[in-house]
Length: 346
Image 1 (cartoon, one colour):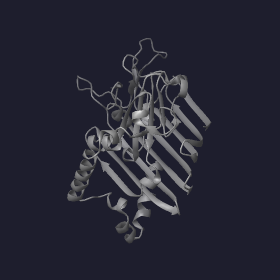
Image 2 (image 1 turned 30 degrees about the horizontal axis):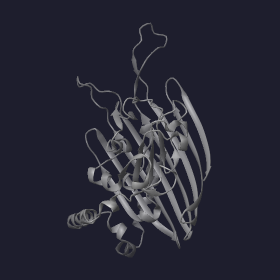
Image 3 (image 1 turned 120 degrees about the vertical axis):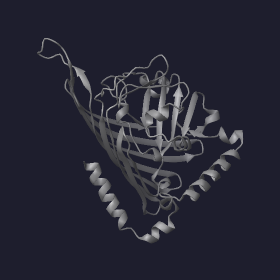
Image 4 (image 1 turned 90 degrees about the vertical axis):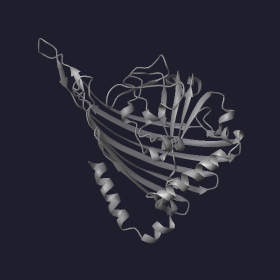
């Protein structure tokens, strides 16, 4: 419950903030907008998008095709970009749901927490020919060369865009990118200033909530903290019996962005999570007649990433990125603890 403690501490800290900061910070005031303000904001965004030319719409910047920023119209690949506007307007609450918006992607939900995502014709829960990254950090697991989608979570309000490349990308990204690349890119701390609090409850989703606060540490240095939690009940079979696939998940993290000069950028970010996932497996123990038994799975992990970018000119940029990622899971038949360290210079 360390994430809930983080959220409680963050909310307590927010209560002590100077009220003058709330009136002077538009981002913070937008956390709880009035109905008229919300409608006005949406209308202005629609007008702004409608006024863009076709050339402007094609100039959306992407980075996953050639590992550098370039216009979508210049990218030599079949790429689709899911924007924050798409996520907000459609009420998307998870990354797998967002990927249903990408043409050429097959997204299937196996149970309450498990997903099968890949290109059509290659989809199963252990699909292993798709490279998935979160802010440049690979979330590949060598256990089955795929992705635990139920563990890939962040604040959807903080997602800047999701770049989906269909087709081979192994020459640039490695052997796991045979059928495509998915890069989930979140917004910087400078773009998420102020306070955001969301929450809700329902029948199957018994409760969910998130809190985020962003501020300024020093000149050209920004930070944000966040915590989120959700508790989902069992789904139901066609005969109205429970599927024993309830799960709860909690996650917290931070991000620091510093701009020491016009051509240098430094980013430090980290996350930690814990989840408990109910499931039913076939018993093959000492009993003569195999049967189905409940076997909950506990999963937790932490990661931290650092990135330095230096722009030497309009056509030349140096980037150094390193990250550490730890995952642990324990279930009835196996347990896994894995530490991954990566260093990339380009």
